[in-house]
Amino acid sequence: MSDSRDPFTTRRGFLKATAAAGGAAMTAGAAHAAGDPLITEKQPWAQALGDGVDATPYGLPIKFEEDVIRRNVPWLTADPISSINFTPIHALDGTITPQGCAFERHHSGAIELSKSDYRLMINGLVDTPLVFTYADLERFPRENHVYFCECAANTGMEWAGAQLNGAQFTHGMIHNMEYTGVPLRTLLAEAGLDAAGDLSDKWVYVEGADASSNGRSIPMEKALDDVLVAFKANGEALRMEHGYPVRLCVPGWEGNMWVKWLRRIEVMDGPVESREETSKYTDTLEDGTSRKWTWVMDAKSVVTSPSPQSPITHGPGPLVITGLAWSGRGAIERVDVSIDGGKTWQTARLGAQGVKNALSRFYLDIDWDGSEMLLQSRAMDSTGYVQPTKAQLREVRGLNSIYHNNCIQTWWVKENGEAENVEVS
Ligand SMILES: Nc1nc2c(c(=O)[nH]1)N[C@H]1C(S)=C(S)[C@@H](COP(=O)(O)O)O[C@H]1N2
Ligand SMILES: [Mo]
Image (cartoon, rainbow, N blue to C red):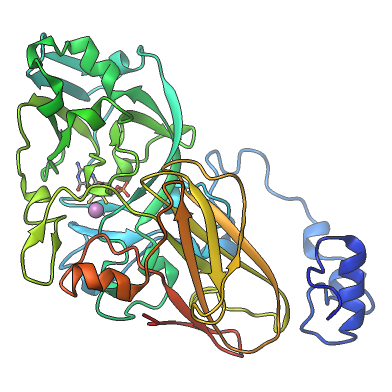
C-alpha cells in the first residue's frame, strides 16, 4: 500500500490496500469470508425474535457500549456532592454530546426542581421587577444554538506535568449541545432597562436555586449579546444534572457562569465579587497575585483517539487520528496534528466548517508505519490565535494556576498501539 497514501478514498484503493498486505491479520478489512462462522453459520440473533417496540420506552445505549460513561476521579474532591465527573470524549465522535454522558459539575449536588415549582425573578435596576413561570418562558420567541460548555478547571491538573491518563480525564470537563431557549436580552427588555440608565457599566448577577446558588456577575454587554436562557438540550428537556428545567448558556465563557436551575437575575451597577469569582475561578500567577474576570475560554484542542483509553488495536496501516477543537473567541479555522512531538505538523481535515463557540471535529487519516508517535494537536481560531505549548503558557502564568489551561496535549503512542499522557513542553 506504499503507493496509496490514502487507501480509503476509493473502493479500488481499499481493495488494493487489502491485497498488498496479503494475509496479514493487522489490515483493515481483514475478516476473511472463507471459514468465518459469523458468515457461514446461522447465528442466535437470526433464529429467534428480537425485542418488541415497547421494550424500552426511553432508549438506553446497548450493553456493548456500557463503557461509554461519565467517570469521576475520586481523589480530586472530598465527596461526590461538590465534585465533577468527565465526558467520555475518547469514545465519542462527531461534535454533539449526548446528555446522558455529558460531564456534571455541582457545588451542592444536583437538585430535583419541577417545572410547576419553577420561578425566575428579574429584579434590581429594572423598570418592572418580574417573575416568570416555566410556562411564561415558553411564550417568548425561541432560538436554537450549538454551544460548548467547558469548566475553567478542564486540564487544570496538568499544569505542573502530565498527570491523568486519558483524554476523558485531561479534557473531559466539556460538553457540546444544541440548546433551545430565549435570549436573556428578550427577558431583560420585558422588565425594561430604562431604570438602569447608561448600560455600559451595568452588570447582571445570576444565581441558581440550589443550596450553593453559584452566583456570578456578568457584564451587561455580554448579557445583551448572546446569553441564552435555555430549557432544552439536544431537542429534549435538560437533564436534572444539567439544570432542569432552566439553565443559562453563556457562549464561549467558562462553565461556572452557566448557572443551572436559574432562579434570579439582578441588574446591578457593579459586580458582586462572589466566592465563585474571587476565591475560585481566578488565575493565580507566578508572583502569587490572582487575575480575575478571565471569562473567555481560549482556543484549545485534543486528540481523542488514539489516546490512553482508546489505543490502536489494529497494528500498522490505515489509522484515523481524530479529536476535538474549540474556541470561545471565534470559530475553529484550522487544526494541525503532529506525530513527532511538534517538530512537524500536518493540517487536519475538519468534519464540518467551524462554528463560533461550538466544538469542531478534526480527522487526520494516515498510513501508520507502526513506529511510536508523540501525538499532538494545535487549534487556530478565526481571530488568528494559535493554541500555545505548555512552555508558552507557563511563561505568562507560572506554575500556580489551576484554571484556563489550554496548552497543547501530548500522547505517547507506543509500537504496540497503547498510549500514555506525557509532557512535551
Ligand atoms: N446552580 C448551579 N449552577 C452551576 C453549578 C452549580 O454547582 N450550581 N456549577 C457550575 C460549574 S462550575 C460548571 S463547570 C457548569 C457545569 O455544567 P454541567 O453540570 O451541566 O456540566 O455548571 C455551572 N453552573
Ligand atoms: Mo466549573
